[in-house]
Image (cartoon, rainbow, N blue to C red; front, side, top):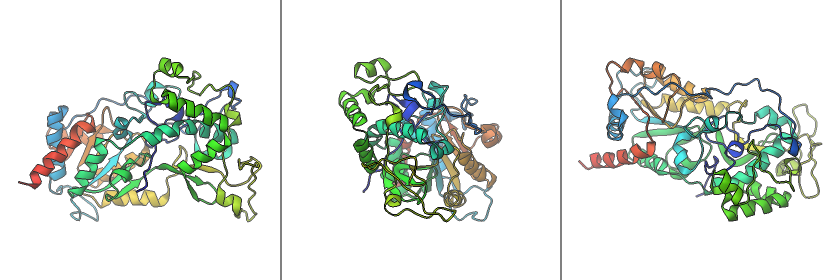
Length: 424
């Protein structure tokens, strides 16, 4: 089995720089101007990052779900309930199973950051913004900085593993209660923990990089080796940081003690190797056989003697295989996500505030179909009154569930009780 990785650990000191949780708007880089590294300032983006401020307090349904035991009972009722009498649509009655929609919140226990949680990037770093697709695609300087930060963050990604929530999802799926999983996360924990349970990665994955021209993919660990070869000073620095454990903490004093110096915006302070000198490889396929461009001309892929991509090229740019902020979700993925909703009888959201429209539109679709919706997420969620307002007077866990607790406190016990039910 191939292990897949993604999402930057919250224990990594470069959280604002290297963070890539769910979407998530998705980029493990915050691109801002740093004079010492000769990185040009970005123009103000026209795209607005949604819901970076606090959301309204959660609506708890049923009221007993304020406690762990109450939430466990409510989730058991939700998962084992018969099809809702209010279900509408072409697939009414076809499937009583639950489809999961997961977000960055469920991977926090694996050491990964989320965006809007208590210690999320938008909370701890008010100036953070992800790199946008048009910036990455058009600017050599943006790509150099992105890949330098990603290079430093990759060892932490490789160390991160699925947690109790992912394994509980596997067990609940094995027992037949789940139809599929749609995840906003790019960490690939779902496909590693439960390969037998269908998982759709809504925003892509970090385990590979993809060529913007030919769409060929290269494994991220193979790409990392190329970055090491092309940037020996950075590679030596990274080896030192891994050895000292400087990347295993987010405490600035401990980081400095272990040799990791950060600029105020979170950039690595490495005097002997500024970001402007960082190099990255070209797409090997385009280099070997330059493709035709849309205008019919033959692409030009030029590299240095050791294989570093040159900006005189017209093709061969590799990007992470994720949906960047400002980039459209693949139409086939969008359709598959809608079908996953339509093929289920109820929807359970885990660890997502639904701030991104790509996630909210799926919940909205489920709501319009009359599907019971359950949400387990710490803190507020987008448009909760729309989803749960009618249940305040007469709460029924079979028709809706909302609690603001850690999924690791709830799902493993639900698995245990489902096992007990199976043996009754």
